[in-house]
Image (cartoon, rainbow, N blue to C red; front, side):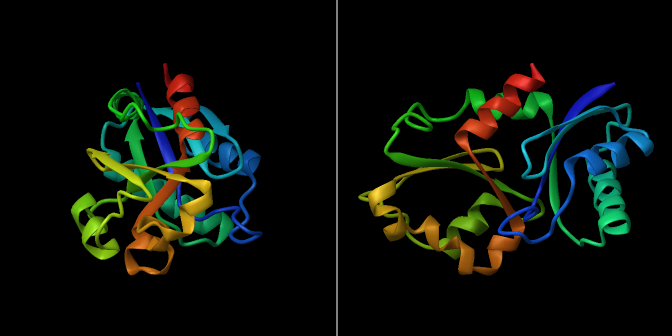
Length: 179
């Protein structure tokens, strides 16, 4: 039995794509997943499965959500070990400055981190700090100049539909729940 995290993309944001975390937890439990825990209302699910095939788990979760909630959303599934490794490899500046926004941009395969960077364009070091590890981009930017960053423009790009974003506190708390 292995522990996984599913990061759902674009649910419960601005009143759109509403999904009850209680119903989602029950849905996964009814369909063979174990030790299912949801974390906050933005689509973070920790669960155990005896199936080691992450692609199978991802497509099963997407199909269950489509059937139950009528939402065709993408999601990323990673192992708890992978999430802990991501947090352990975060740059030292990520999540530190209280006057900055700190996000982890999780790239949903088959999209790559390089594709995201190509589409976003040149990073502006005068406004943002950016680093990556595996399929995760760490990004920090001061709140007062946030709108000047390159990565803040990702929302209007086609690649935006191929990522899911979490703030540093959420990512760190999920990793703690996985330990």
